Length: 288
Ligand SMILES: NC(=O)c1ccc[n+]([C@@H]2O[C@H](COP(=O)([O-])OP(=O)(O)OC[C@H]3O[C@@H](n4cnc5c(N)ncnc54)[C@H](OP(=O)(O)O)[C@@H]3O)[C@@H](O)[C@H]2O)c1
Image (tube, rainbow, N blue to C red; front, side, top):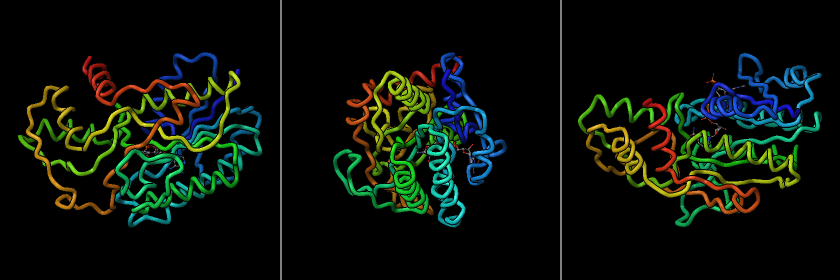
């Protein structure tokens, strides 16, 4: 039986992997978070791994407070880049394969067609810079790594755009939401499925390291996303489209960060659901 170490397992993606693991008896999962395995502590990673015969590391641990990072860049860098070096070096020492998650915020958002893995990265925020540095470090210390850039992640747990909209939509009659930032929401459960499909493929003999893009299919603005959330959840809250410049945030976000997913679909044979379909399914499940 192959053993998979998951770091940052109490976060959105980590939780989704925990749920998925219940239906995956072929793998043994070791779920850890900062209280059980602080990825900033290099020594403790190898100490934790000793004798556990770890085959895969899925790094879900990250500093994800995008606005706070502007005032906290050193800590953000430590978790999103220096600690990634620790994990990459540990993976090499252990002979394990590492799957690391990165972000659409490594791009500056000036494209008008979906970003390819080979497109120039030029982050606009401290968070984006820390994730870009994490990618570069990981590729240097562990050329066999798989790096998956994702975008606009949401799930049943934690704070995300969906949970904020569900909460505010019930309290307010109308809400201003930015309509000139374009991307694609990603249900963390779909990303968890994709990661496990990749591991299944590696077990079956298909392995190609490198950077991959993954989000749900389709494109929308935050405004479209909010309207769809209210429509599906049956919340009567009017959504007013506003310009990003009228909703100033500490960190600058890319105006356009749609990811081209052709490479991951071709290499690992993934079928990816449309964002509306995944949102509908998730909201239906959580209503029960
Ligand atoms: N959320 C998004 O919209 C989004 C978009 C694109 C890409 N991503 C990327 O996708 C990945 C998963 O994101 P997510 O939304 O699931 O993140 P998340 O919910 O913020 O979860 C991250 C987890 O990592 C933990 N953590 C922080 N520092 C740690 C450390 N030193 N050692 C071990 N664990 C630590 C956090 O604990 P605490 O909560 O206690 O800090 C948290 O449980 C991340 O790499 C993120 O950058 C996210």
